[in-house]
Image (cartoon, rainbow, N blue to C red; front, side, top):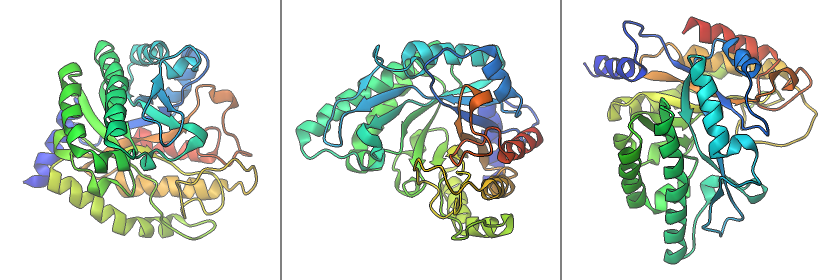
Length: 333
C-alpha cells in the first residue's frame, strides 16, 4: 500500500494521467550574460528534456559574512530577477516545466555547506538576508507560474544549526508560492535534513562516490550505487515523499565517480567513456523506480553550440557521448 500511495503522489505532483513512468527530466540551465533565444531552448528540447532548473544567484563576500547580495546591475542577466523571468517565460512558451532554484555563491567558490555564523547576531542577520533573497524569488516563481521551487541548495551547516528558522521559512514561502517545494541537499546531508515532511519532494544533489576506478564500467558503477540507493529508497518510503535529484552528473575525466563533487579547471585527463558509463548507470538504477521522480543534469549552458565538446573535461554533457545517453533515456521515460 505504501508503494502505491507514493506512486499516486508522484502522478499527482507531475500532473500525469496514466503515465507512471513520466519524470522530471531536466537540465540545470546555467545563467548567461545574455537573454535566452529560441535556438537555445531548441537544443534542450532536442535531448527530450521536459523541464529546466532556472538558477538566479545571490553572492556572499566571505564565509563570515551574513549579507547576501542579489539582483544587482553588476550581475549577469540570467542571475537576476529580470533574467530569471525571461528564462522562465520562454521555457514555458515551449511547453517545458520550470523549477526556480535560487543559489548562493560564496567568494572564491567556497562550499556553501560550510556556511556558519559565529554569533547569534550574525545568525539572525543571515536569516533576515536569506529570507529576503529566497522570498523575492518565491514571489517571482508564483508570478510566473513556475512548476516547482527549491528553497535552498547545499546549506548543511545553516540547516543543522538553525532548524527552527527553516521550518518558519517554509511556512513563509508557502504563503507566497503555491506550487511544489523541494530542497537540494548535498549527497552527504540529505539523511539529516529535518524538514522533509514539510516539502513535496526530497531533493538530493547526487554526487555520491561510486568507484575508485579510472574508467569504471556500467556494472561497477551500478554496484557502487547499491548501498546509497537502499538508503535513499528507505528515506522515500519512511517520509512517503518521492525523490528528485536536484542535481546529478559527472565530469568527463578520469576517476569521475571517485569524488564526483570535485571541481577543478585543469584541461587534462579527458575521459568521455567514464562520463558516459556513469551517466548510463544512474539512469539504469533510478529512472525505472516508482519512488523516483527524475532529475536535473548538471550542467547545461545556454550557448549549446559552443559548450562542452570532446576536449572538455567538465560536468556538462553537451556535445559529448553522454548527451546521447541522456537523450535516449529522457525519451524512454
